[in-house]
Structures are given as C-alpha cells and as structure tokens.
Image (cartoon, rainbow, N blue to C red; front, side):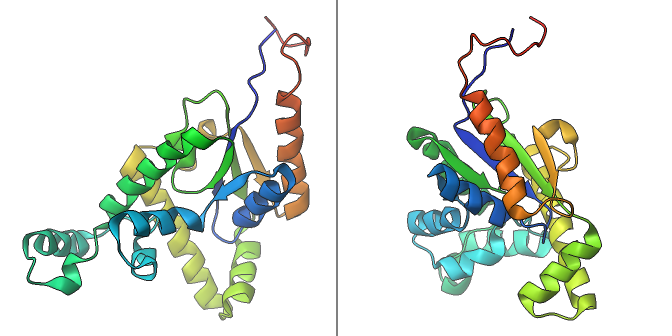
Amino acid sequence: MRARQPVRIITISRDYGSGGGEVAHTLGRSLGWRVIDHALLKEVARRIEAPEAELAPLDEHVGGIVERIAGVFARGAPEAPVLAVLPDPDTVAAIERAVLHDALGDLPFIVVGHGGQCVFADRLDALHVRIVAPLGQRIQCVARRRGLEVQAAARETERHDAERRRYIHHHFGCDANDPGLYTLQINTGFLSVEEAAAVVLQVVDWRELPAHIDDGSPT
C-alpha cells in the first residue's frame, strides 16, 4: 500500500493553442487556488524594476546569439540606456525560477508553463499535467484567438511549440515531449477544457483520501 501525498502544486505544461491556460484557470476557480501564469512575469518586472511589456518577448524564450551579444554589451555599457534596462532571456528565466521557489512559502498553487514540471520534479506533492491537442485544431484555435489567417496561425503555432521545447532543453536539460515528466497527459481534442479540469480535480480529490485506505496497489 502506497501512502497518498496530498497535491499542493499543479504544473500545467501545454502545447500552444491547446487550452492549457484555460484548464489552469478553470482549476484555480474550482479549487480556490492561485494560478501563477502572467503574474509571474509581473513579479519579475517588479523585482528588477523593468516595464512588464518590454520583458514579455523574453518570457519562456531562449535568446539567439545576437541577443546574447547585445546583452553582454548592454551589461558592459551603462551609457547605452535602451539596451541596459533590459536583461537577457537567461536572466529573466533565472528570476522566474526564483519566484517559483519563493512561491513554496504559500501553498497551494497552480503554475502554467515556465518549466514547472522540471522545477518541482522532485516534489511528492506536485501533480504534473500536460495539455495537448491535434495540430490542426490548435492552429484553428490560434487563428480565431489571434485573428490570423490559417497559414500565419500555423507558423505562429509551430514557432511557439519549438520555442517552448528549446526553453525546457536549454534551462533544464529535458525533452518537453518526454512522457516521464508528467503525471497526466490530457488531449483537449477529445475532452473539453471543463472535462480536462474535471479529470485533474478527480486526481486531486483522490489524493486527499486517508493514506490507510487500501487502493489495491502492491505494497
């Protein structure tokens, strides 16, 4: 018999356009838990006293060689204020990880993206959920949401997917597509956002059961 550790952290990883953010916020409302999503970047902006809108392009982003060179010159050239006020993507990511670790002082919570499945991989109270959907459906969703033509939506979807994979590999040395990183993978091409959230809620509720209840699993 395995002891059940109550869930106090839910990480939501998501393919672009799969509705992962919507699932997270639906869960947040149902559980009464805070959702760390866009608020993460807001906190980073507060800590480094930088405009949130200017940090947004660096969020869950891995800079290229041009950006890295620019960042070096910016740090070494205080007379160039336009470059010097903004950190590089690696610095933003490091501060975001620090914010997530600080959040452990105020459990429970739900975190969307930002490598949460890796940051909290060793936590027994963390439930790691990946939200996926068929590519064609995601492209259509992005087209509607962003007001784009289908071809433009396809390019944006593929770019975001690739960038998120690069982000996880660069900062954590993990393959975002590795099923071993996740407790659950839910396809919103089959389940609605509400149904996906209900599945996660059922697992959270199950983990609240007393540890002495025999679930039939081997001891």
